[in-house]
Amino acid sequence: MHYLPVLTIAGSDCSGGAGIQADIKTMSALGCYAASAITAVTVQNTVGVAAVEPVKPETVAAQIRAVMDDIRPVAVKIGMAGDAATMRAIASALRAYSPQAVVVDPVMVSTSGHVLMPPEAIDAFRRELMPLATLLTPNVPEAEVLSGLAISDEASCHAAGLVIARDAHCPVLIKGGHVGGQDKVDRLFDTDGRLAETYAAEAVETPNTHGTGCTLSSAIACFLARGLALAEAVRQAKAYVTEALKAGAGVSVGHGHGPVNHFFNPVKMLKV
Image (cartoon, rainbow, N blue to C red):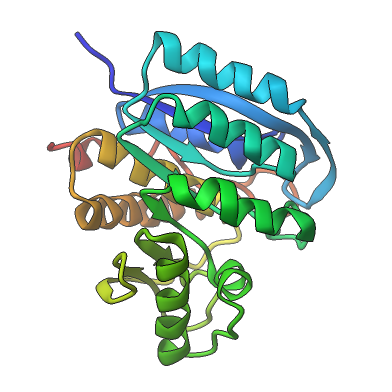
């Protein structure tokens, strides 16, 4: 027996719907072994984020080294990274190991509007974390920040994808969950900024959307760890998230935006 280890580097969500907790649930559901390095402890629930307490950068780096020295994860997912010092610590620790795949989810603002990446940290994000990425997974507001462009339609999304991909020197998946409409469309751009794949799924009517971005990026990391090519890893990860949204639509957790159902039995997706 051999586990496929995947490391998540992110913040802790005490309500269990996003961050480290969502990542571990996703990785476990998809048959991988989840290890974690916690960057911050957040005080939040389904209604919103009340506070964020950063973990010391040297402690974050020490967690990464402890996991990498012993368990050697095949893939890494980076979520909420916090301030510039923490980003430098993450980058320095990971560069020593060169993991096969690094999915970077630029967590900048929570669904409830709480700022999770201060403006002064964005430059550090570009310098430290973007060069590590096998894939960047911004949503539309994050893509607007990273590209400096307003995104209002397909053409402007393509323009933003071009800017970000050329800046990051890696593929970029711009997620369309924040855009209204019957279908939710994610677009994958290659390293040169060309549109490589379009992924459309019918919008799911549900209040339970807490942690969908964390879940998607973790699922992509899992499918990359399982040996899928990038475009197919994204396809299967999006299918997983869509089914998790459907399965969790009727579940009541908290008084706000509850979590998706990570354990809806995704065995059919593991034919790799």
